[in-house]
Image (cartoon, rainbow, N blue to C red; front, side):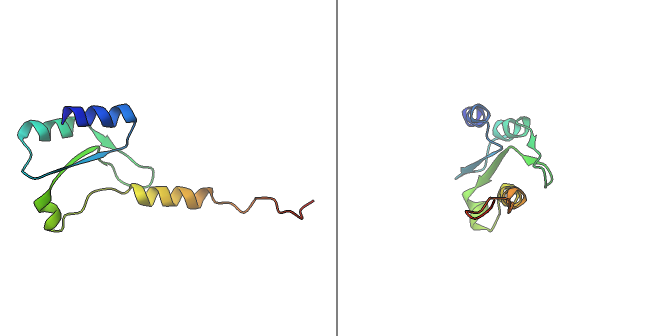
Amino acid sequence: MGEFRGTIEREGAACGIMIMRHEPTKPMIQEAKEAGQFKPEYHTAFDRLQIVTVQQILDGARMNLPLMEEVAKKAQKSKKNDQPTLLSE
């Protein structure tokens, strides 16, 4: 978990999700909590490191990743119709 956390921090990633076959150990959970939270502009904060088991996924658990919505909102916000046309003076 420490290497995973280091990679996320080194790459400047907002978050990372560790998918595991078995339940995480207490030290793994502690490491994930110590990584802190990420606060997107348009959403509530969420854990930077999340641990999810395969069984949780099969049971219908969803990852807490509001980033796709934020990316879409930023793209819409920056979309402006101020590009000059070929015939503009």
